[in-house]
Amino acid sequence: MSRRWGWAGLLVVLTIAVYIPALSAGFIWDDDVLLTENLLVRTTSGLGQLWIPSKTIDYYPVTWTSFWIEYRLWGLDATGYHVTNILLHILGALLVWQILERLRVRGAWFAALLFAIHPVNVESVAWIAERKNTLSLVFYALTVLYFLRDNRRSDWIAVGMFLLALLSKTAGVMLPAVLLLCSWWQRGTIHRRDLFRTIPFFALAAVFAAITLWSQSWATGSGAAIDRSLVFRLGAAGHVFWFYLFKAIAPVRLMAVYPLWNFDSPGLVFWLPTFSAGAVLAVGWGFRKTWGNAGVFGLVYFGLMLFPVLGILNAPYSGRSPVVTDHLQYLALIGIVSLVAAGLTKLPAPVRLSLGVAIVLLFGVLTWQRAVVHQDQEKLWTDTLAKNPAAGKAHFMLGVVYEKRRDFEAAITHYQAALQLNSNTATVHNNLANTLAKLGRRAAALPHYAEAIRLKPNFPDAQRNWANALSQSGQHAAAIPHYTAALQLNPADAQAHNNLGVALAAQQQLPEACRHFTEAARLEPGNSEFRDNLAKCRQAGQ
Image (cartoon, rainbow, N blue to C red):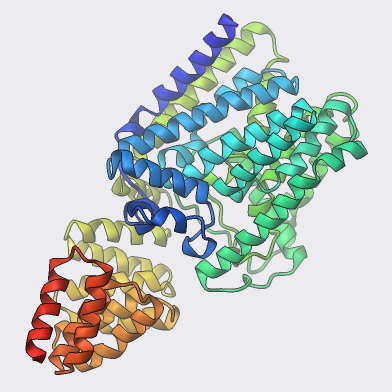
């Protein structure tokens, strides 16, 4: 037991060591949307709403609740959130070690260590909003561990753990199939009893898959993705499979946004990745009685956990080219590191030790470097542009960075670069218009507001911002319809109520103005500006 605690301690120490840069990191990517500026997290009354599907972008209430709790502990100090993410990642790795040992996979501890310090996982650990991954892994691992105990009480505990996992993130919706794969690995076949035991897991997976597809459609305001034939999607999936496999084995040139593939004119080469993946699995299956079973187990697990993001499903988040990003293979990566670790055990001891140490040192350095890149927005998106100059997302995010610094000219440059790469993004048009308006260039801003609304009609912020620009230039009558449209889309926008009241008062529509000042003060009773405007309106109306 003391020996096991020693190995566990070594894994913990090495993982913390490579993630030291993340401890001093700030908020990045969409941490503002999901945490720092999320009223449901910041307000006491928001806890209940976090559990209502239509109130959040994704229905991951356990993850959002963890943010709600931590916000009460350390507010906007990012360090606490990073510590939690690192600890959850370590706990997940330790549980993976236990699962692999239970499955009698050789090199189980080393596989867990490789997973813990793998550079691909930095995006899931150092990005606070990806708590979705680190938290869900803990529950997924507990699901497998309890299922492997193979008794009725443990089976029901496993179902409960799986429910918590899905409520943290639905990325592991394929876990019921993985449970059957584990049964095959242990006994060489899948019995009828195995199928019966997994029925509750498949039922939960089906429910949450439907919820995810619905919430994605609701959040994006769109229905199905671009209609591509199933045959085409199977061909594209091969590219995604091999991309993730390569990054798992050789985690080099990692970046926040990868270049898109051009699949507009697929030729013979387009189909080779899918055919080769099938051929590798077929060979492994043919030799499953000897050396091939481990390869089949690891690669099938890898493919199963990647299945929702391979692009085979014509889901709302799919497009003309599959989108790949490091955090999407967080759970799937376990299959590949397990194969690598098991393969190393076949080598002579001196070679095994030397190669193992070399891999740990290499991964440690790469992970440290990626953790440094993830310390703040500017580092992350500058690194992305250096590797992928066509990343419009990186230009947009750098524009946000410079806008917050009040370096408006630099922000405009990046927003314009983002639009040159993709002119059909409503948020970029809105932000560019806001920045132009701050510089007093309201005439130049108005067309971008109009384009943002054309691209995304249900965009309340753009309507309100457009109205603000009109009102600030004295065009109060023209601003009123846009404030009204913004409030139809978001009736709880206190600032829009207040600003509409100002525009109405300027038009001498005092009763209506007072009504909106009253609503603004009701929504934000602590705002002195709203209360003062209401008092002045009532006094002027007497």
